Image (cartoon, rainbow, N blue to C red; front, side):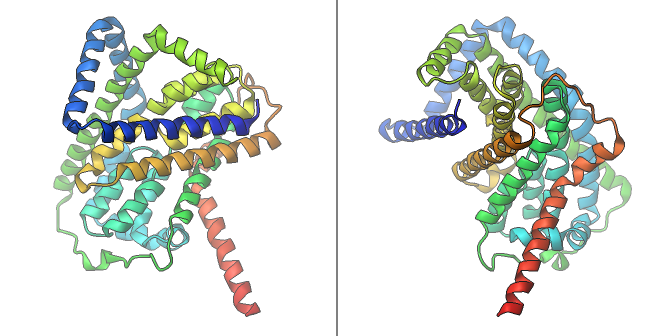
Length: 397
């Protein structure tokens, strides 16, 4: 299959869905609350009709949250909350700010949520973007920009869950990581405007004096609340995905659509499920008969786009500030398309002939640690190249 046709089909379907939803809201003169209530009522009916499937999916969601999210998310949240209590944002801005934020047109204090997002992934970037905005470190305009830049899949999910467990080759994870990081950096560069770097307000803010015991308690309370909140989203969307996968009519509709568009089996179905919750979509694509470059490219798209489950988690942190979710979702879609293109080109050139049955486990500590430094190396490279060109142009002029 021609990858350009496939990508055009994805873009066309998403734009059609967005357009139809917009037209529906304009034509139907009904309050938004009534529409949401109607959709929730349908979900309640589906839950009771598919009670066994819903309960089994909820249990699977709880297992996923307990085994995958709690061990990584909770300790990281506690540590980051303690850093915020003791003005770690100012420390991060001095160390990482100059090379991490300047190329992206962000103020230095933005290095804290960027680092949290690069290391741990969704939805911590959005949480700490909101935290530094609430603390007065950045203004609203920069806050809106930062949300789309500090927004990526975590290395553990891409390398561990997707590439090692699903695809059977951990080396693919580094390709997906690089593509995801480059795509979000491109979003940062595309949305950058001249003289948009804000003043660092951290020097004007005084850290309240707090003893370690109180700071530790507050950090744990906040971490528990956030972890449970994320777990709730995982369980709810696991139930929704379980109901959809159990419905044979939906599978038939997508099979007919794939035949009509001459696309591989399960490709659009996987994209549909992945656009709701990325884990299920990645798993279906990994088990499909698609070529390796196309598999990696679609998975890269799903990881960058994130899916409705992640978008809902992000919205739970940012909704109090009336962030335009349409713009955020549109930029995530563009990021996914960029990630798809980058992955496909690199995969065609370097990994087109590698079989997915070859399992390469990242057991070496150096390789495991190295994946966390990939985004910093990419941004440092962009910063160095920009500085070099600036000096060359200065000497030429």
